[in-house]
Image (tube, rainbow, N blue to C red; front, side):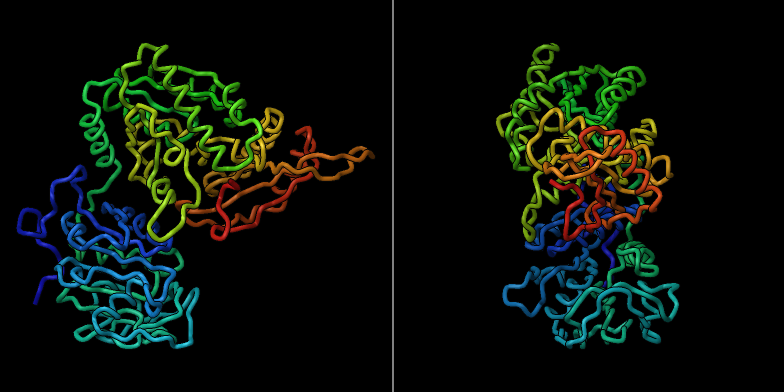
Amino acid sequence: MVSPAPAPAGAGPLSPAPSPHPEDLVLVVDFGAQYAQLIARRVREAHVYSEIVPRDTPAKEMLARRPRGIILSGGPASVHVPGAPGLDPALWSAGVPVLGICYGAQLLARDLGGVVARTGQAEYGRTSLSLASGTGLGSPLFSGWPERGDVWMSHFDAVVEPPAGFAVTASTPSSPVAAFEDPGRGLYAVQFHPEVAHTDRGQDLLKAWLRDVCRCRPSWTRTSIIESAVEAIRAQVGGEAVLCALSGGVDSAVAAALVHKAVGSQLTCVFVDTGLMREGEGEQVEETFRRQFGLDLVHAKAADRFFSVLEGVSDPEAKRRAIGETFIRVFEEVARASGRSGARFLVQGTLYPDVIESGTADAARIKSHHNVGGLPAEMGLELVEPLRLLFKDEVRAVGEELGLPEEIVWRQPFPGPGLAVRIVGTVTRERVEILRAADAIVVEEVQRAGLHRQLWQAFAVLPVVRTVGVMGDERTYAYPIVIRAVSSDDAMTADWARLPYDLVERLSRRIINEVPGVNRVALDVTSKPPGTIEWE
């Protein structure tokens, strides 16, 4: 019988290869659904390093990275559709543990001789799961589980017969083979989604697979993240001068703190004041980084230039490109003026979701991000992106460990192009001032209600339309403000927040009364998908 776990480090061909991340590696194969990002994040929550790879990655390439385990994500396709995403068959016999989830489970069943049928009985949402007597209770995945529990399903096809050699470990009313496994080959599959919060003990299942099947060590911690990042930064930049693109957000702040920890006085931080920031951000940046951390900080006030390049531009992608290109030009000028003209490196706070959402093999690009899609190729500076492999919660944890103040670490996400992409239409100074004032009221009231940390984001949007109103017995023709508030774990999916009615009433009253040029307030009740969190 073949052991389901790779050999320990240094013991044979499955030992982890040296890499910038000494932690055990788990690969998540993305079959086109946003579940892949959530799975990767859940693996990291178990203190095991994970990365996402496209589903067409050759098995040879995946195995060359010496992963401790491979997870196959869910996906929107059916295994019965001609041309449905498949997998390199060499993976099934490689000796590396594999966990198939939803579409990944059906793919495993189909490729190894099982039967996946169109039963006509779909399962969506919360479903009761029953463990098989003997095999289910004895499975390492379900160790400690009760015989019955609730799981989250999202499928139309169902596995009705497992491949030869596999034991059925669980079922649901519409899925006779809801979980199956062959421990001898290290192959496991579940039809449900253990990565979502609606599955009882789903995280326990993932932890059990990582610990008992893959033999992963829980070594991916905030301390190890910082140590790896500092080592990588020093290896990349050597003794060269570094410029940091510092804004008021948590991402660039943590990136700056990491690089400063790595190279100290080699770093010059540049805060480009685009005129598109939130209220009070410029002052807070100066207070934190110049006075508290003693960084070399240049405050470049360039609002006029940004408003100039945005004049008459309404297309969201055109806005992002214009801002990105101007941003780099300002950086180059600041570098020359500050005596850093010889700098070769530019630090940016790119996150893992930025990289993923900017384009994958199976999903069209949703939008380009300021940190990824808006940079001109000829900018002449090599990027340093110490957060490129981190999710937002990991970035916050690192920020706390580095000693950044709470008001920066827990600041809600803000798009790189700033308020320009929260104005749906052309950008003017007047519209930015209106939006900034309305947004400040949203932030203040959400904090007063004690909801700031519970919400992923809460902000104001200004659509460039005029609405009729009556104020002081006079007819008005002014802008509406839309309040966007969402809850999320990682921004890959999000639900609109059910704000208390008294909070919504205060927001509406204050914005209309205190912000000139606004006569109507609306609430966005769209989840992601189908919408995005930002309007542009």
